[in-house]
Amino acid sequence: MRVFVTGATGWVGSAIVKDLIAAGHRVLGLARSDKGAQALTAAGAEIHRGSLADIDSLTRGASQSDAVIHTAFNHDFSKFAENCAEDRRAIEALGAVLEGSDRPLLVTSGVALLAPGRTATEEDVPPFNSPTYPRKSEAAAAALVERGVRASTIRLAPSVHGHGEHGFVPRLIQIARETGVSAYIGEGLNRWPAVHRLDAARVYRLALERGAGEAAHFHAIAEEGVPLKAIAELIGRRLNIPVVSKSPDEAAAHFGWFAMFAGIDAPTSSARTRAALDWKPEQPGLLADLDHPAYFAR
Image 1 (spheres, rainbow, N blue to C red):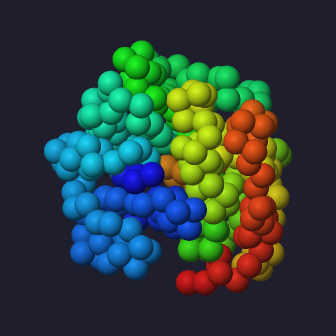
Image 2 (tube, rainbow, N blue to C red):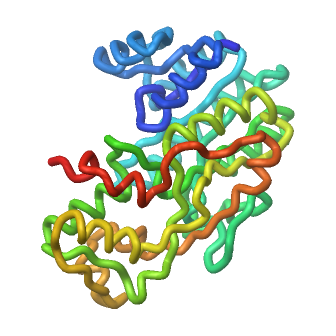
């Protein structure tokens, strides 16, 4: 297939590009900058200049392709609601191009707020109109399915890890360096699902090849839940600093805007995804990956 990938130069998207090409597919990658275009060329992809905000560039890319993988998202949390609205518009535009055809669309979502207080499964559906769940990617995909588009959702773990990441775990490391302690909240038993980015990339490819349009949701989850205390203890050992518990009242001052994420308890199953796609994670788990100098290099 010729696959149009948005977010093709991002943390997950760049891994998807390489996985698709290695499996014999052709990739048309969205690139905003010359640097991004150069990276895609080096990976063996074709270049499509544009951006998430440039709807015309998205529709042109989708019209030239056999399938679309949408991973692009603006992660500036200071304007999260605006970014969610932009994401919804992009998905609607991509779906409009694919409507009336058999070409699949994979959109990206997460599991962090999917099923608070219990283990989430692929059968769970987020509250589309809830202010506590502002991301609209799944609602947009569901609306496209109603119109006959072969749209499915890939849900990512809060920690998509690997050497070189800039996500949740590096933020914990940064806070630990700034404060001189590696902290967790309460007993630290809240759990983060995790997946290595190379394993996550394979879920996208397999969903295109084997299951897109046949199942509504796929979970790129290798580990159901890693306790935050275990992550904090490893960070403390690596940085040689104390490991401490913060009360819920102290968490906001210590973690700042990241306190909500530090307190997430989101155990998540991927049993149905593994069975449907014959997917088995092969990369190191989060703690094994984190216990490496690459995560602590300045």
